[in-house]
Image 1 (tube, rainbow, N blue to C red):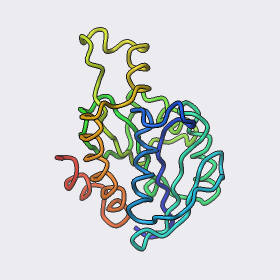
Image 2: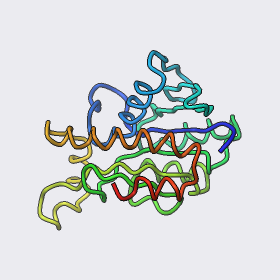
Image 3: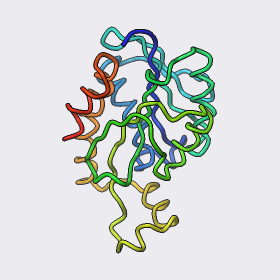
Length: 198
């Protein structure tokens, strides 16, 4: 893939939300910066924290919307339209309760699965053709019928990992960082084959 790429990490701003499951996308971008462009500083643009850099020969914009999860689309659409970035060059990393903790999935297009950040982005772009980097955080441990309630799910994604859970999650983030980079130089299908089984 040539041209400019946009890699979005979803989360909520502020210390209150640092390290929570819902901030998995933010954590991925922080890990990506540490691994490939250490020392790069975030600047404010498009209602987001933003870094523009070259990673493994790819021109990339890294974006952490500061609009809170439910309004992520505003920041993403502003960036996409300003730089005229095609949707197949947009990757959105986000927490996913429908994947077991530590499971990684790459997907292009499709529904939002009830994720308000994706819902906002798809609405703002009027298209769902961007790539999703789904970071498994698992469902609440309650009984199945209770674990599907909105209030239970909300409390779960806004909670932090235990030490053991964080170890599993961090292992997934290492793979997810590589997947984010590979998406710039391989087809989506090739990256899916490489990472979706892990």
